Length: 232
Ligand code: 13P
Image 1 (cartoon, rainbow, N blue to C red):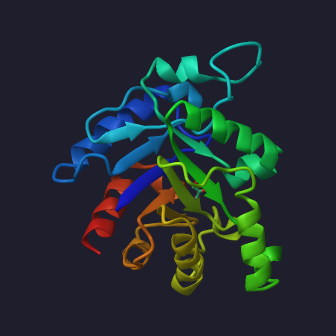
Image 2 (cartoon, rainbow, N blue to C red; image 1 turned 30 degrees about the vertical axis):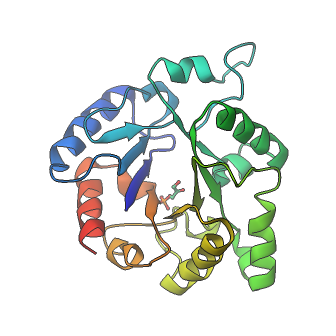
C-alpha cells in the first residue's frame, strides 16, 4: 500500500523540511518505498529517510527558454525521478491539453521517471452513466504509452477532490476494477481520502495506494492516515 501526499500550492521550503522530519519520526516500522511526497517546486529536496520526493509538475525539456517552468536539470539537482502528470487541476485551471500532457509523458518516460498519471471525470460526466464515464476516462489516455513499465495510474474523480466527500467504495471499485483489467498497473485512488475513510478504501483489492491532498498537509494527521491504512 502506497501513501502519496500532494501538497499542491501549500507549504514553504521551511515548513516542508519540518514536515519531513516530523513525518519520518512517525514512520518507524513502515517499509521504505511506500511514502511519496509532492511538495511545491520551491520546496523540492532530496529524498529523506522513508520519504521519497517527486515533482508536481515540470516542463518536457532539460532546460531552456521556458519562463516560469522547471525542467530535467532542476529536478536532477535533487535526484528526483518521479513526476505527477495529468492532474485535473492542471488540466482544468492551467489549461493543459491531452496533447501537451502526452508530450510531457513521452519526455519523462524517455528519462526513466516513475510517472504518476492522473485521470478523473467531472460530475457532469459521472451523471451520464457508465458508458460516458469510461469513454471520458479512456480518452485521458490518448497519446499515452500505457505499456510503459514505470507508470502508476491515479484515479481522482474531480467531484471528490477537496470536497470532503470521497467516492463510495462501489464507485471506486467500479473504476479501479476496470482499469486493473485494462492496464494491470499500480492504481492509486485520490479524492477526499482522510483518516475517517482510509481503512475502508485500503481494503479494496484494486486499490494499491492513495493520493492525498488536504489530509496530507499536517505530518501528524498524515502519519495517522498511513498507520490506519496499513492495518486495514
Ligand atoms: P484532496 O485529498 O484534498 O481531495 O485532494 C486530492 C488530490 O487532488 C490529490 O492529488
